[in-house]
Length: 75
Image 1 (cartoon, one colour):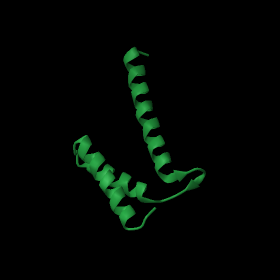
Image 2 (cartoon, helix red, strand yellow; image 1 turned 30 degrees about the horizontal axis):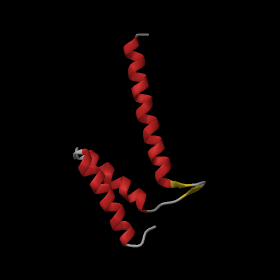
Image 3 (spheres, helix red, strand yellow; image 1 turned 120 degrees about the vertical axis):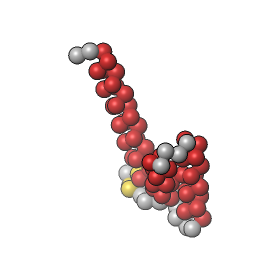
Image 4 (spheres, helix red, strand yellow; image 1 turned 135 degrees about the vertical axis):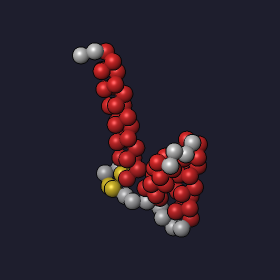
């Protein structure tokens, strides 16, 4: 197999590992699953990414969603 194939495989694995770590850190606290404001922030950020918003807008939208949900009483 060519070098180009292995470079693409390595890139794909990197993206998959980063995505799984992001989800695991969002919904887990220790050994317990918890649904809190981080999940809402992740959903808002995913929607902003889907709408092809710039990265800074995605980060600000996620942070604003987390702050708003915490203001409403979610942990």
